[in-house]
Length: 330
Image 1: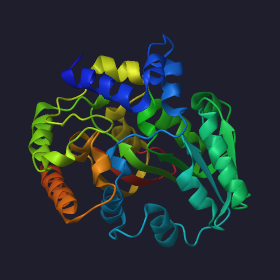
Image 2: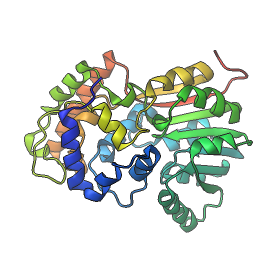
Image 3: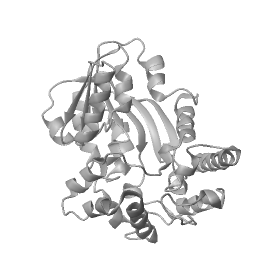
């Protein structure tokens, strides 16, 4: 486990250049909840992360649905939920609710409830729902643990999109709270989720592989976003900076799959990779939002490198659909 790395100091500098000193100062609060909230309660953030790359999104589509042009939302509605109706979906840590808004356009859903503690993101979603006249989607600004403790309704689907890795005590959350509010035969859906080492403490083997992959990117496309600095290496993230930046980040990720597999029947579980791409493309992804032949070649080389890596190592990120049985499996 790495307490502090040179990557941490680089990242503080880059975040200062990208988001300004005010953002960095919010991380000095003694309140862990406030530091977490400030991470997500930002408007109009422009930052260079791997998930902003359209080609990466197409890659995920291919890995999950088998077709780079078919999103997981459309895949679920066409293949798994097409014959179901009057569905109630609860989304936890929904952010701007992009996927939930897409689901709400389908007549299969009678109600979708989005819960998040970043009010400004929910406000954005409310405006979109109003503009599109979507009346079956509702929003609750709340601490999720408090919301679940007071929840007496049951749901057909509980949905986490890139949010489950922010929860501590995952075993209790999944095996007690989520299992309890899902109807028998209902689905837990987990998308774009990191499920490996707590606090993203990558093993040395993985860091070495990321640095090998970084060499596949031409130097001119390794300029750090917002700076004139060339990215030459990736050293891994230190524990102290992870906690200071967001105490909830990857706090209990090692327990996600064991908890889910211990309570739910696996309907489908697809690898999304990320083992190599996240570290290699961190802070330089803006170069690949639009592509020419050279950039596309570099991305394809990275994709092939990661594919080879996850043949022998479990995928860091997964998409999964799980079904609640009559009783817990363990």
